Image (cartoon, rainbow, N blue to C red):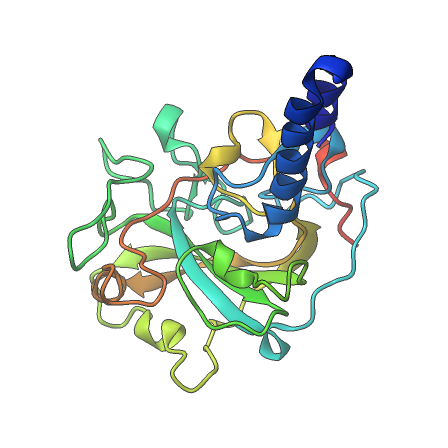
Amino acid sequence: MSECWSLVRSLKWKAFVPLASFFLINCTLTLIAVPHAVWAGNASKIACAKAGPQAPRDITSLTGSNATAFAKAPPAGKMNLCDIHFHKFAEHRASGYTQLAGKGDHKGYVCNGHAPKAGSRAMGGHGPSTGCGGIESGDTVEVHWVFTTCDVKPGPTLGSCFSDTCKAPQLRVEARVFYLSDKKSAGNFSSFSDYSSGLVSVPKPKSAVEYSGSTTGSGYNDGTCSPFKVTWNVSSACTPLQIASINNWCGKDKNAFKEDHAHGVRLLVKDIKLLSPIK
């Protein structure tokens, strides 16, 4: 918003009052529309110096000095599911996934003992009509179940967590990390994504860490930060997941979220001024 005011002040008011009014009105509308932005990485951004606590982070460290505080979101069972999506490689770092996936496009973390195959990419293209794009057996994925206090139904993109009458909800992300397996004994994603009863069975976390952060996604790797306030609950463990089950879930016509591929990761936030203290 400050950029908008600077632009307006730079105009010569006597000659350009109509033009100045146009810029001011449009900047105001842009600010109002922020909560409705499609929050998927290239969503609303803010200078990091003005941002609240960010995500993702190393949850083995409790250190943080960001003074921006907000109320913890209610438990997921008392909120509404609004989005499910997943990232190839873990955005967070925890005791169960400490190994970097690699350099460049491979930024992110993999489950201990499950290094990515040679030539594996951080995110694939959009998938076919069925199945996920860019994943294979042995890969690590971080799945996000997103909840909101808005009275909404699950839908495509994280913009589904807001509504015209609910512009500033509390938000919660339940994050779980898996390595994809061909074994039938591994977890079945359909049991974690069925919300037909109005509820969704998120896998129970192991040694979870809850903290105040923000939205994530590779769109914030340009040095900007997310303005959204999110309560995170991240499991420290890696567990196996049937790759066939997540492939069966993927496809724009197969789930309400229109998810058909793995998303990229936001690089780990390490600056303690951008991290909340974990108590």
